[in-house]
Length: 302
Image 1 (cartoon, rainbow, N blue to C red):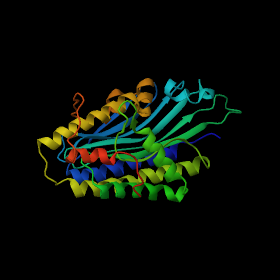
Image 2: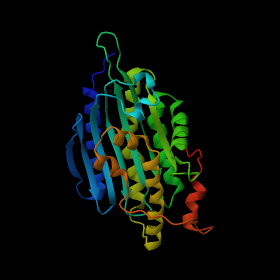
Image 3: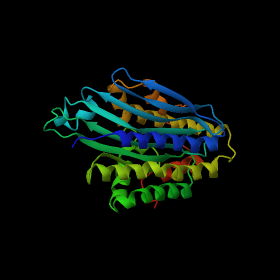
Image 4: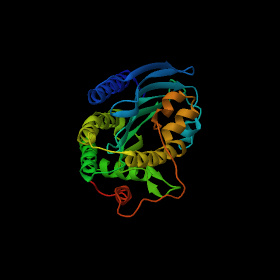
């Protein structure tokens, strides 16, 4: 099967616009737009904000890039596709709010296509991936329940088995092995997804992208006016350090982007504006900061 990506691209560009519009309404101001081209093929549009009233740093990125040969991060687990030309497109976002009571959030929906080498007899090979996850600093259980229920509602129309599978995958993927702790309170994550054919896999992926605003914006609205001080900002910066560690060491999207000659500014847009590390620090038992560590182990939030 040869895949026509025109309608896929139209969905992703429209999703980026809808999400940015929703975030701008809360921010009360515009996101910057930065269109770019990639010398090796393709390009994208980065919509971003820095120093905002609500969002201290964040980006909602669309990219559609192509290459002549699969990079190591993609071909390592599919060696039979080595040497094929490829294209990848999708929307990826990370939002770092200013208020420590508002959680950081990540969402990504994407498709990867390894193109046929011989037009006469080879099929294009595709897989979708994506998900979303919540990374609070001072967590509220009702926010976690809301977020996870939105994730489940997005996947249920495509199969009752998807949410438990993708939730487990998220819990295992967003885990800092060297710290032996979760990055946040999870959500859903999937990759190499092509079950039911292109149309079915694409529909499930669209449902995840479409669910993002309802999953996240109600949480922002509930928490953005809560008062905070230096203590809360200090702990936020400390936990953001964990976010940096994960993205630079384990994140497949970051590794793929850097290995494939992607645009560094866009790839590293996921980094927080401020982060810090401390030597062998532990929160005081019973403190608000310790509450986060009590909720980090995976649980059934739904």
